[in-house]
Image 1: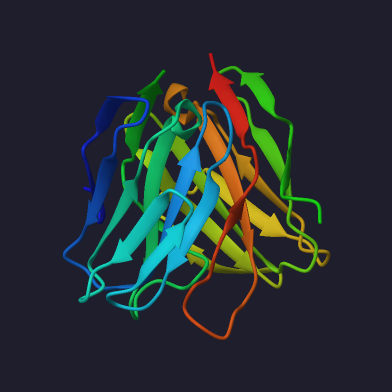
Image 2 (image 1 turned 60 degrees about the vertical axis):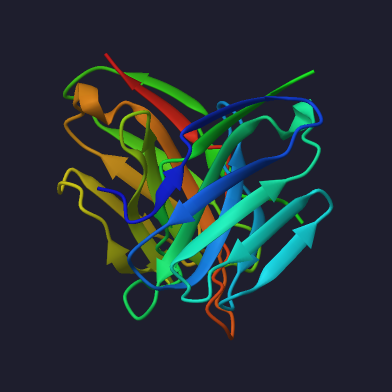
Amino acid sequence: TQLLEQSPQFLSIQEGENLTVYCNSSSVFSSLQWYRQEPGEGPVLLVTVVTGGEVKKLKRLTFQFGDARKDSSLHITAAQPGDTGLYLCAGTRWLTDSWGKLQFGAGTQVVVTP
Amino acid sequence: KAGVTQTPRYLIKTRGQQVTLSCSPISGHRSVSWYQQTPGQGLQFLFEYFSETQRNKGNFPGRFSGRQFSNSRSEMNVSTLELGDSALYLCASSTPTSGPSGEQFFGPGTRLTVL
């Protein structure tokens, strides 16, 4: 059982559409990170959110950390084919995990077709 | 700054053999963590080393072991390989921060296939 539940598992959209990926847990996290992974490669860090209620924007990507630090979301505006990949949320649990131990969600496979 | 490097990138072994994987962290990073990624289980934490000491261990059998050297480079070893050990093994490096962020940076992984 994964501590972080991601939904949906799979998203297929057309270029120009918007999408949202969710990451939920019953545990409180010190921080949550979002990664994107392409086949045969390691995950690439997109963002880290630390403060409850925090919203971070990176170009067309918007990340939100829930007020209670138990959930997060990733929103992509006007998706492009280059956004295709496996999106993973990961985090360290408050007072439980050291910063060297990440709990991962199962991932959301996003496919953006031209 | 060079990223995390892992060698080899691909390995094919047979059941019962042992294997050693290597990871060089980003310069200045003293923490190295290892993860196993499989289609069924996703990314699972194996262990974490900091200043040559194992700080955390995941829920894996004793066949999985690791170590860290004084230059922060790390190796992990899997003995008596089983078919289920086929996976992408990922190494991540990080550095202590004053806050809880603990961002980790991943290498490209070693793809291990056990026949």
